[in-house]
Image (cartoon, rainbow, N blue to C red; front, side, top):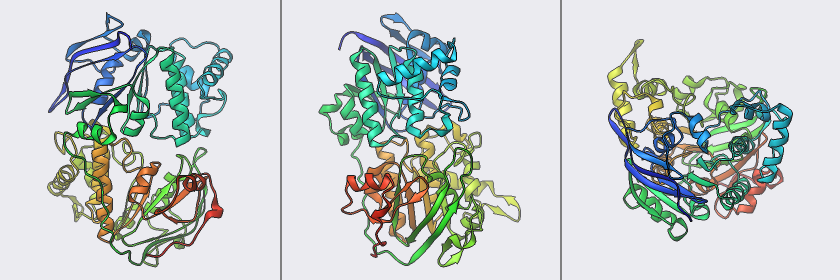
Length: 507
């Protein structure tokens, strides 16, 4: 590695009640893939927002190729050669690829010329895109390609990537890594944020570790184990989730012949979905994003009403019941989209605790809201799940993504569910918090709760689930015991190999 491309010295940024970054210093070399690691709330997002011009530092300096670098806005950062691929996509589904990319350019060329350039660059970097396809018709992995190509058309000197593999299949991850290695070979530097530590070890040249807003060290990932990196992040030994191995009970939730039309032009229809869940069982449902996961959770939670007999709890038809009625009988859920679906962004954590906890935590009496009990419930969630926030009065949007995820999952776990359905429970969550969430799900199962975990993280499903099935284009494969299931078999199931169906194994 040659001289630093970006040199950061003493960057500090404080918000009311919290110092997000405390005199952070580190450097990114030319042609280097540099990881930025840390727990949720460690200050990673604030730091990259300062680099990208979204946040102004209170103190400290940055130099880019030896010259002072003080971007007042993202436009200035892009003009200086800094591009960023965000964790949450900012694309319009009703527009095509080229139109979306044009919206992110200061002076877009003629659409035909831009389309030709998109095809050329996307194929050159192994991420082929059809510039005329509607974004709404693209898979999650293809949508990420749009974001990446939009950045690459700027010919950046520094590319910032925030959790880039959270929506990708293993095959798509390898394609992305080949692209990033090609960029590195061409001299582009990459600042890479991810909670997937084995990916960091496979890809990155160096890593800077933040803890509570401070730089607590650096390491060479390929010479450091994933556990060692995780323990540097948290400052203590890492807990490994353990199942109590309790006996499963009777069937508590049964889905039979569940079919639903696609909820929108860009949704997925459910086709003859069948499953049964027993007390004390963790059923893992895998699949690539966009294959019906959101639609299945909506049908199980009551957000989408279905035929009465399509969903039964303890033998009683409940398909016609809405979300509150299902909560009352003990079916709780946590959707994938935490900000906007699982939580109202501008409401406080107390108000968000009230939104789903009103029924089971008795937060409403004779039409009146009991704010004292609601606040106490929010504080219980914050303490039990180590949610990093100044207090329950803070708005949901003020939390880092991982901390909001801990709050959302904790809010449901602490309501004593009979059945809990969660979609992407540890998405964007650091290793320590992910272990805590997985342990909470296993603890629920040990108490006899039926748990359905919908996730794209296959390692997670293999760690917590007793049985596994996969969604493909709205169809659910047969259920298999996770013990002894191979990666090849999982891949076939995710690809829609429905002939692998077997009877649900008892015990």
